Amino acid sequence: MAHVSLRHIKKVYPFAEHERKGLFGRKKNQEKEAGHRTAHLQVTDEGVLAVPDFNLEIDDREFIVLVGPSGCGKSTTLRMVAGLEEISGGELYIDDKLMNDVAPKDRDIAMVFQSYALYPHMTVRENLAFPLKLRKMPQDQIDAKVMEAAQTLGITEYLDRKPKALSGGQRQRVAIGRAIVREPKVLLMDEPLSNLDAKLRNQMRAEIIKLRQRIDSTFIYVTHDQTEAMTLGDRIVIMKDGVVQQVGTPQEVFDHPANLFVAGFIGVPQMNFFDAQLERVGDEYVVHVGDATVRPSAKKQERLLAHNVGSQPITLGIRPEHITLTMDKDAMLTGTVDVSELMGSSVHLHITSLGQDIIAIVQTMDVDGDHRGGFALGEKVGFSFAGNMVHLFAKDEDGSNLEF
Image 1: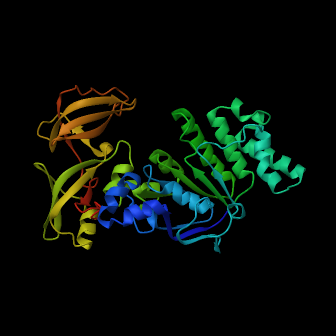
Image 2: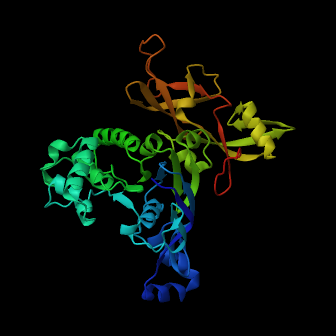
Image 3: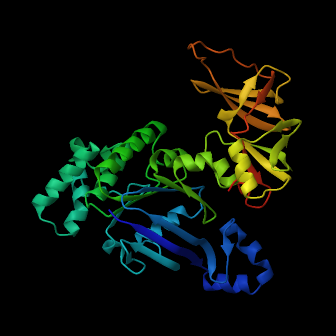
């Protein structure tokens, strides 16, 4: 177990000499020529800036999840903590000890990879024992720790098998067991469930939740799957283009997204967005969406007033589960049902309204347990949403939440 501190961590991938001459001999073409490699990442004289300024304090035994789309810098950050990537700038501390120049083997960490990285010629027992043998631990202690890890993960019956005789979920359990058998201060996991099918992912998520209660390690977990992030993390760090967008508990980032990116990334299906107009009349606010008017809740009014927000064009967000459908054609907004996706206990309706696709979640059962009547494709429906459920975002480049 350990406290981990990342202070102004920076990662730059330098250009090769021929690239440097080609790029910086023609400064005005820099972005264009480097664009195919860097997407939205910043190009500097040093090279490609993958992580510009990462700051995070991780408490002892906390489970932190770094989440974001592919290429956002989350795995690079994890690898810098592991010592597998050199830190270009900033400071990494584990239990108040500076780790920038400490070798990976001396950081008292363990890492679980996406690809399992098991030794194919060794049995499960030998794979689990290998890191302990490197420490020259007595054999009786090795045997005891291997058995303890195997029992914790439910893999005792596979101890004499080789990895090729195991399923994907079993291999991942072995990979996790090899990591925890060392009793590391920090356990790093880089998308460990991405190679598993949906059922196994659900099972392994539950296993990891149980595991963190049994061992005294601090967890740093990387994923692009926001469902994993929401179910596993004590706190979530949402990243985009190497930059942290928001840090908070799963409930905080779901209820109060800091900007449009976070609002659209967290939640399945994603939040609906409307072009709208925020109007301030004295100390009161209303939002105009199409021909409809929504009055934000009293708490939202207070936060907008505290930030002295003025009248302006905005983006209004509403989650699919917060939309109420009605057959009343005089409802707040109307649209046409285009697609109906049955999800078992609910139906996801795609509705064309105001020239865009809106998703609404409708429960298939009423309070008495009876099946509700469905909505036919092409049917005209009305829908509305309450002022306490709307999210108001600025029309600036970041799409910042106006209540923050």
